[in-house]
Length: 215
Image (cartoon, rainbow, N blue to C red; front, side):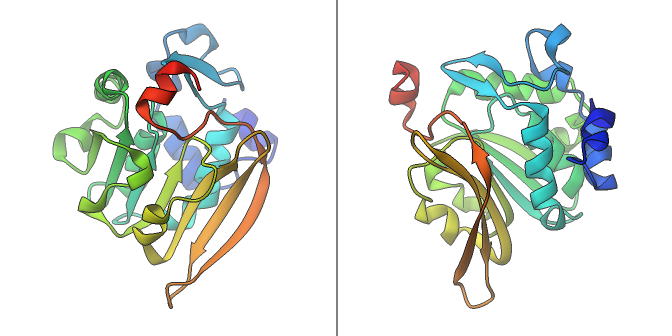
């Protein structure tokens, strides 16, 4: 899977390749036979795990903000796959925090992580997954060098910009019917620069109740 992403020029960094090779995607999905196919998969609760190329793209966009010792927030952490990749990249001196508002997904993601190469980070405490409304971020460990959002917001939540460290980067899909993957860089003076990376299609970043209704 990683070799294919490298051949297509999506994975260009050794650090991203190593993280994706270390964290077995097959541990994080129910249908292991399809785990390495480059397509999204349903994980229940009206949400999906993104296709490998989207995970790879987000890791590449955030790579310079995922160095050992840095802090990263994963909003809508789902199965825990990308949170685990983040933890491998920032290491034991860093911190990787996942936030997911479906308690059952949080419980299953912890089990997934325990069965993966990221298990030591979970046990040691540098990796954690919490039940919460990701639109509010996770203030306890802010500010973050990197923030990733795995669902599309109608607009960028102010709380996430507030919790981004100056010099940090936020990657978030924005839009309703038409969505763009936006890259938000926070400048040293607190202002932000936003650019559109590519058109995407994500499930909406919404309340737990709306998600379970399939709104």
